[in-house]
Image 1 (tube, rainbow, N blue to C red):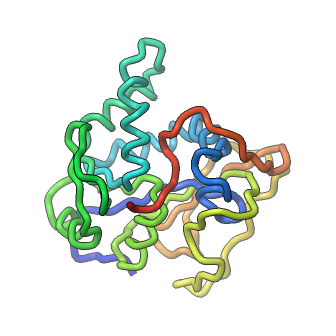
Image 2 (image 1 turned 90 degrees about the vertical axis):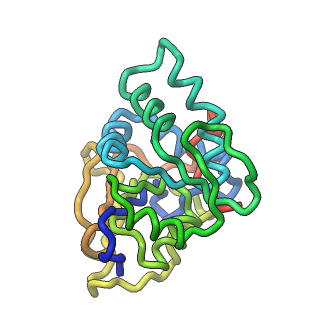
Image 3 (image 1 turned 135 degrees about the vertical axis):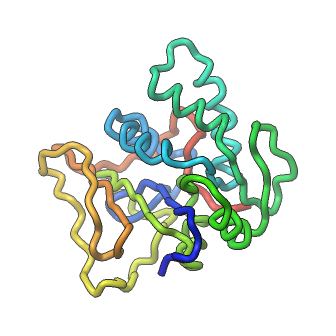
Length: 234
């Protein structure tokens, strides 16, 4: 159960394929499906509704280095649209905590490294401030879920079948509410991206369901950039 003793909420955000993977079998460098989804207008709008409520971001080393390699340039590019630029400015200014056992130095402003995930997060939750946002780092989110520190799990379900790779949740996950998990959305459903409470996950857990008129795809070619890849801690 989530830790309700502290004042700040911890929101975890990630994207999953229909078969439950945050990354495909060939690793983040081949996750074109994820980058295509991330650049869709409804995804950008939904994610904006999440990050604008947070003033601390939690990242693993791979995501941190990937974000830093691309986002400052995107933010300064005159051709960048207003919504994307606002996200880049938030990434520049927000407090960033990088969980790593190997990263020794952080070059991005307002960044620091920690190797104590649970202790650091408990301190952050006890401190004044807005939401704490864990961004698409599977191993970090898994550890926070096990520790009962996640208050709000936001999952974007992308209509893609990967067939293997890195899972966010185990294949059998007992429901806290006793309700069986819902089926994935049909590929024939005519709908834009929506959000709804997920009874199987329990209160405060939300699934973003993205429907499409096309059949789910297997996409395992190289992505346009390294930023935003799901990863583990190092």
